[in-house]
Amino acid sequence: MLLVLLGAAMASAAPQSALDQVRNRCLTGELRWLSSGETYKVEVPDSSLFSVEGRLERDGSLYLDFRTRDPDGGPNARVPALRGREQFQAILEHFDRRIKRVMGYWVAEGDNLETFNRLTAPPLSLPPAEAALQTWTGRQASSAGFGRPRFEELTGTPGRYIIVQVAFER
Image 1 (cartoon, rainbow, N blue to C red):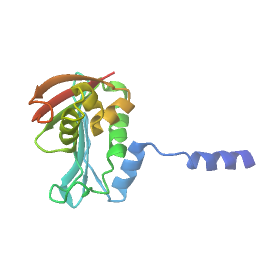
Image 2: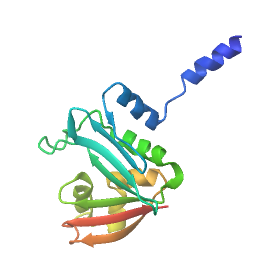
Image 3: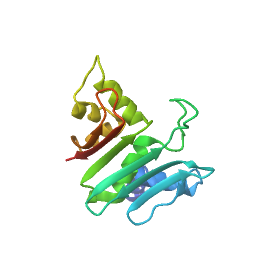
Image 4: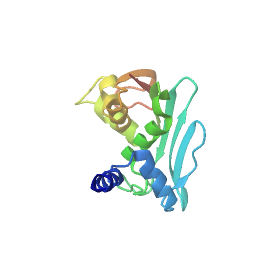
């Protein structure tokens, strides 16, 4: 009897997956679940401006769109309900092993493009592949086993790129 109770206590203390944590936060109303089929999407209920979306294409390409920062609030104006790393992990769990590559498409303003340009500009002047791996998306993709960047589009010059499309592959 004691072993059964101990086993049940240990099972209830097991850490939840990122996907389960997100689903629980949707049940409490902190987030709104809008996922279906080949799309993972959650948003902040009182503002559809803030959302995270992952879309899996038939070829296994995962496209991400994270809108977790208030564009008028500066770099520290993050939306607490949308935790980037947790959301990235939840997207990986949602699509399981069907992901073949994580796509990055960076234009205009955004953390990834800003970081990429800072790293490719002097004095650092990193090669594009190294710089891509040091962006937020590159670090997340690499930690999930997608650590080989392959550029599909690179428009601009080091430190002044305006379009970067990169596939992070296994």
